[in-house]
Length: 330
Image 1 (tube, one colour):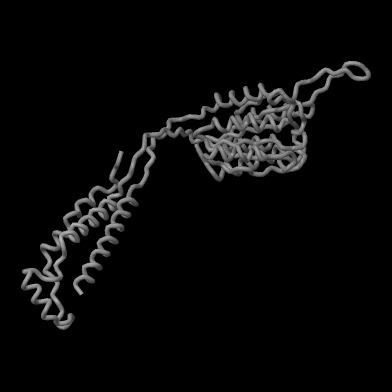
Image 2 (cartoon, rainbow, N blue to C red; image 1 turned 45 degrees about the horizontal axis):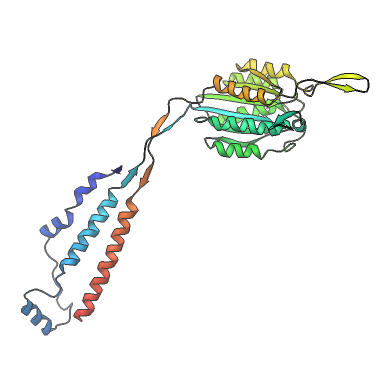
């Protein structure tokens, strides 16, 4: 529907008429015009002065004034109400991009794929479901760095995740420093709740901050951490000396990840394949509900440019008409 933001400005509609009725007419300046006896004769013959405006010019001026007032009232088109879910939560994903994430021990669309490729798809879907949360992204290897700051633009965060490559932050794993960077960013953007979802397939092998020390700092700041350990299940293969058991996730430090989650009031999850990983993120959705009480908003489209455009067009037409009348009378 159409709505006027400043309807009270319509009270100015009779202002030109009131000024004409109350103010005295402007007096002609002596000697300001060329004396032309034939003009006076024409005025006497027609019974009206030469400078009198035509009816069309008056109506045009009224139309311009109405258009200007209509624009000043700020007409707006209000669209259908839209509910914007908001939970007020700040949520950061910390994704391991160290060398071991290149291990192709997970299934993706029926084919073997690297751990990072599967994480990109599953975590990307998780990001899209977090409507109402501000989501950020940290990639970490030997060093952590902020790939995407906290934002409601989830599509951009997912695109940044899709652009992640193995080794971009180094080949080792700095779990403690990744937690420290998340703490720093969350302190700069306080909110009602703060959550970190940290995913890795190894142990802390780099960085200045130990994971348990970082977890204690996180607990003091109210940051809740959910940790996810990724890696294929042990496999029994036939070797030269007989059957052997190979554990692709032998480097995974589950003890540390469990301790980090426990210290901060979060939980630790183990994902051995894509289905496990999808179940983990769905479980986090349940533990951290995404939708709070939504705000109801209506899209607003300003309509005043149409009124201003009409006033400008009428003014140009009136000016052209007045110019033609002056030429005709000369």
